[in-house]
Length: 349
Image (tube, rainbow, N blue to C red; front, side, top):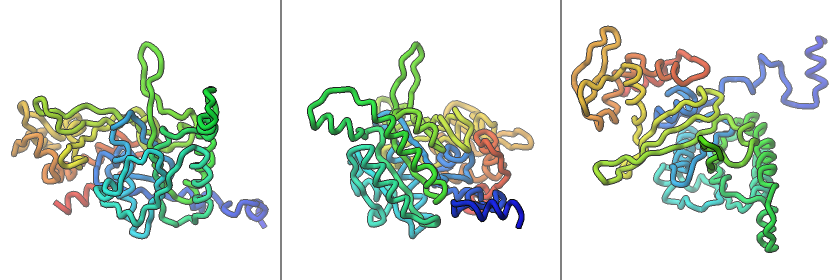
């Protein structure tokens, strides 16, 4: 018996395996959404998407955080028809109709109301402990930013006004315990969170909940937004996904996404700014856009208005010219020459 065999046999951990054969280091199962730039923000590639582990979506109120979470959850549940969603709710701002807008079958959603961090911790760990690797479950917490600690809640019941120093510690413990389960059992967890402005001459947005969230998360987004106006009328919002932390995407990347009141998330939004920067698209005159021949640099007809750049017909030939590879080089930490999504877009055109 070799030394390796002895060590493996003597291990008390049943999942112990030779690294080259370990199932925990196989390629991560990524679930792409329908929005290319959301996939880039999650994985650095239009061919990627949501992976197992902790993804934190942070930002002020009304910054589309829950909607981004449900877009990802809907993609997961579409890919795996047998999957279910474990939805922990502390805000109660997502009625059933909200789920249906994202084509989520509410009969496949287990709704668990929570009032404090400890209640979430005990229930979530209990659920994860009883799942097997291969069980298709996606977990959403909406939100951890609004959760009190058990001590804070009890102090309010007892009419005590003392400061609570236990919340950050409780949250750190929660994510410290959940992280191994998520990765060993291939379960994605999306946590909606809040931000606050730090003190100082040049204040910046900070994710609430202490350092435990930063240590445990695979992805942290901080969301910003601007109004999308036509004259004085607000038509929607232009969001910017600031990648605060990622295992896959270059940190501090800024990825634009647009949302309109009429159509929700605009599937092809965000691509135009990057395509202009990469010279895949040109702006020959104010309000007009056209493709650029990648071999000659020639501007190609027809010219289109900005509204037409939100259609698949405009982007199919651009992806055929290697735009997906350019996005990967711009955003991804680990380069991958796969062109699967580009090919699918071209084939479906």
